Length: 256
Image 1 (cartoon, helix red, strand yellow):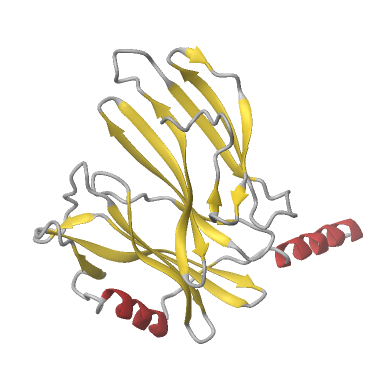
Image 2 (spheres, rainbow, N blue to C red; image 1 turned 90 degrees about the vertical axis):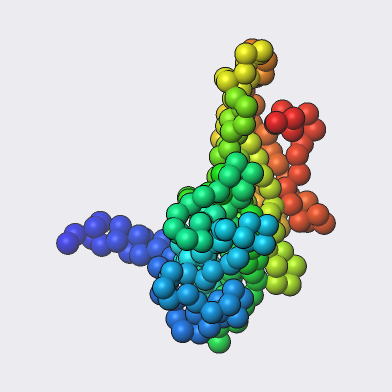
């Protein structure tokens, strides 16, 4: 191996070591016990934590661990744990949600040393037709070790199609809250009168390291009632008092 190759490998190693390591986490007995305390005892037959639905006696949620990441932070290893479930029929175990039903999401942040629960929101309603969003990303939201979950949920109603981008992250001492929900894809192609088609590309502006929480950059394109929008990239600042992202003046997506 020549000197140039060795130098490249050395630089690559430095880069890797300075990025948080994501590791697929196995559920330890202590985390299993913690989840039992939150949801009740694990149902070995159904292989999940069963959560009854009070409003629908024939249905339930079956909370399963669908994503588990470990991040190395300055204060130690943290397990970011995601549990999800669709609305399920009590007898068949198959999905049976109606248009008005949401799926269920559980979010947990656990310090692995001592299995200490840092933040949690065990039962978040999300999605439509009783289905929970399937794709989730863990994203860095600040120069510090502040991370959150991002997902997209889709629903349609009477010819209107919506795709929503949502971020959940820690808030206060030990809770988790929604920081924003932004429309990233909309059209009313199923409606006879008028035609609106909007798309938005979102990215976390992690270059603004002077901010407590990074702002979002949102590029909006499309047309409203047949009139083409001027392509523009908007900045959504983070309000640390409200602890959520705020819409700028003349925000084009506020009416959808």
